[in-house]
Length: 101
Image: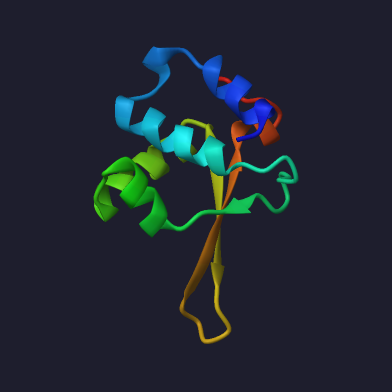
């Protein structure tokens, strides 16, 4: 976990997100790399996030969508050469100008 990501998350008021969203953010911050940038972000599989948080696929997607709407993260979805869904890259608010809604 980068200090930038953990410090940013610790400054977000508790009432700004649900417990499930906070749990997801902890794991995203843990995966955050100091080399992450607003252009590239970092990858973390949904399978790994589901296992770490105990959320179902639909529950995780609901939380991620709300976190994105609230400005805590940005997702960049990719496609493989054959057109199937590729990796999702995450960019946290600390890399988007320190967003603290």
